[in-house]
Length: 451
Image 1: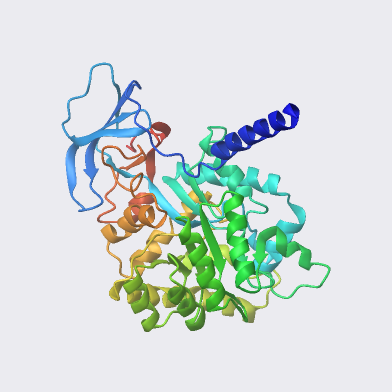
Image 2: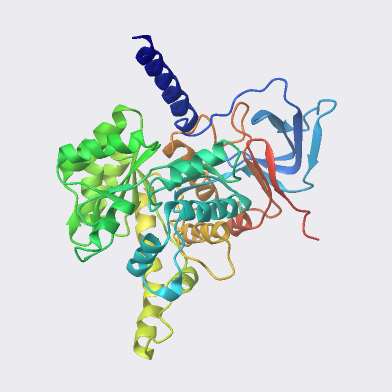
C-alpha cells in the first residue's frame, strides 16, 4: 500500500513544480540587493505621467529593477556606467495587440488564404520558432512587452512566453491568450467539411454558455494570461449571454478579456458584457463609446497609415487596372475612416492602448519597425504626442494588468527602458529610431548616436 501513495505524492510534487515553472505568467521584477548596479546616463529623461523632461538624467538599475531615477544622481562606486550622451530615455514600449507567430505574405492574397496556408503547412513548433524571430525584432525596435492575441497554433504563444521567461530565447515580455474563443468557424469563413478540422488549430469554437465557460477554464489550464474573444466574424456573432459568461469566468480569477469586435452590434455586445478592451472597433457608435468610457473599457485601435496598408495589402500582380484603382482607393479611405473613429473615441473620453495587430511581412521593415507605424496613424487622428506615448506605456501596462511592474521609469518597476536621439514630444516618429534597449536590466541593443 505504500507504493501507490508514494507514487501519487511524487506525481503531485512534479505537477506542482511544473505548474509553478510554466504557469508563472509574466515573471515579476524582484529586488536583488546583491546584484551589480548599472547607471544609465542620458541628456534627457522623460516622465511619461506628466510629459516633463529632466536634463542630465540618471537611471540606477540593480538586477532587473529600477533602483532610483533623477537628475545628476550620485553613481555608486563600482557601478557599470552606460553613457547615452544627449539621448532621451523613456520606458520600453508596449504593443497590446500582436500576433508574433503569424507572418502573412502579401503575394499570396488576403487573410483567408494566408491563414489556411499557415495552419495547413506549419506546425505549432515551427510557428513558435518564427515567433521567436518576430519577438526579437519587436524587442530591438523598443517594444519590450506585448500582448499576443491568438493565431499561435496550439498554445505556441505560451511556449514562447515561457522560453523567454526562462532566458532560453531573447524576446519581449509576453502576455499570452492561447487560442481565441469564437463562434463556429473562427475567422476562416466558409470551409468544406473536410477542412473544418483546421479551425481547432487556431480557435476554440463555442456554442452556448456552458461551452463558453468550459473554454475559458481550458484556456487558463493551458496557461493563458488573458482571454481573446472573436465577437463577430462575417455574419457570425457571439451572443451577449456567451460573452458575459466568458467575462465572468475570466474576471473571477483575475484575468482580462480582449474582444475583437467591429460594427454596432458586436461592439455593443462587448461593451455590455464588460470586456477589458475592444480591439479594432473600426466602426463603433457613439453610445457604445459612452459605455466604454463609463465602464473604463480600453479601445485598442489597430491602425496604420495609407502607405503601410499599400505595402501590406497590395493587389495581386495579375490584377486589372480597375482592381488596382479600387485597392488604391481603399488604402486611402480605410485609414481616413479609422482616423475619424479614433478622434471620436478620444473626444468621448475612451482610454486608448496602443496595439498594432501586425501580422504581415512589410518590405524593408522588421516586425518591430512595422508595428511602430501605428503611432503615426494615431498622430494622424489628432492624438497628441504625449497621449500616444502614454497609450504605448502607462495605458498598455494598466490594460495588461502590469501597471505595478512596467509602463514608467520609477523605483521598484522593471528596468525596461529605451533611448532615442530625437524628440518624440515634437515628432512621434522619433520612436521609430530607437538606439538603446534595456529589458529587465539586460542591455539588448546599444548603438552610437548618429553623427
